[in-house]
Length: 205
Image 1 (tube, rainbow, N blue to C red):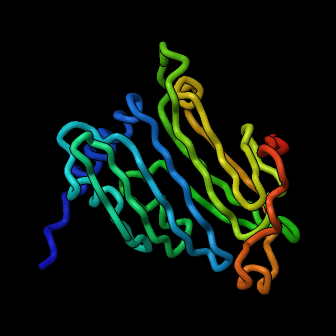
Image 2 (cartoon, one colour):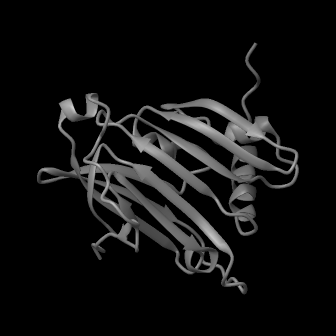
């Protein structure tokens, strides 16, 4: 028997509580995008007081999203793995209603764009960790903005909380060269990563 859906206003309040709680604990999101536009997204964050597995599930429920796993520990550490039918579906969830994810063509390359609308807020402790966002793309990353770190097909952004909350909006972009279909089926979506530590990608801004 399926549970009753949460009212929209309850979900909105719950989403706001989660987003506000991120000021005390960072959000980590790591995804994989396949060539056909589907993918997976792993999330972890500290849930707000009073959160339940049901309330967090409601924040991540949307058309095009499949919740593959979801856990909420006694320390309020929340983690989930989502199946994504299309990148646009991410912004349909109550939790990420302020996030827009798109994939567009640029010549022979593809560009993944993540737009986030937020609310600037001063942070006294400049050392506090902010969100960490990473994604493995179906091809070698050519360039990315906002000081991203690139390692082959993987691109990652990491911010302090003070920097993240200093802006009303963010637009993260990564341009990649799609791997040949045969190469992806052979077990890799991109050429092997270069040896040594990952190097910051060129900033498109």
